[in-house]
Image (cartoon, rainbow, N blue to C red; front, side):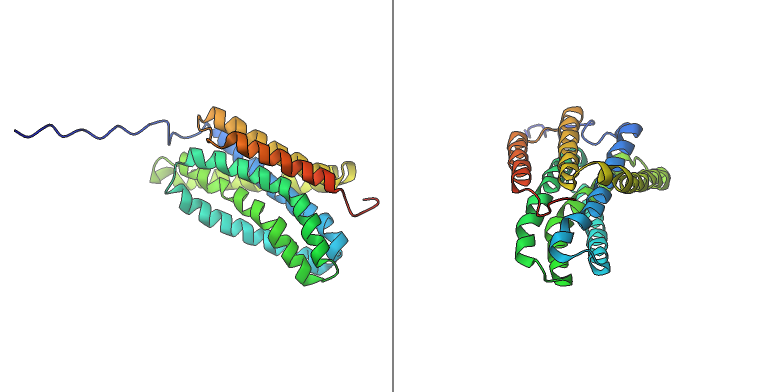
Length: 239
């Protein structure tokens, strides 16, 4: 007599449940805003080492656009293979740590490439700006994966999320140029962006019920990186 075949466990319906529309919009808005804030501030971070030239601007813009393209492509591919909710939490936390790492990375590598012109600018941008831009740009496809429920509504979902991401990028651009740079030191703004991303990652972990096992470790690393960015100071006497 054959035994009964065990039925497969039912999938967790909450694991891939769509986010509230407002939360989804806020996540892609914030991630895209952070990318553009870092892009604009990178000009001031790199200037003491490689100069403030057209080539520096061009290098930073090109590297960030490359990071956005890589992040969107790899993020979309990863969202098809792993749980998008867990992925979102990891992306926000990792993006926060990488944003905090921007200041010490530029400070350390900048001393090595100082005065090397366009080549040094490319190295600095690749080391300091490309990683957070790529990670944060993977947020939008991960959110889209959660929000799309059927093919009939795909265009509307992707279009709305793209619009919110663009709105976030515009807000980050204008806020940096007209508010952050005139009022705050660059290091303070970068550290603030990193802290906000980490906070968003913690909130997302609680709201989405996907706290990573390494959460405390990630926060400890973030504290060390942020402390290093503060301790290293600035090469400029005044901004």
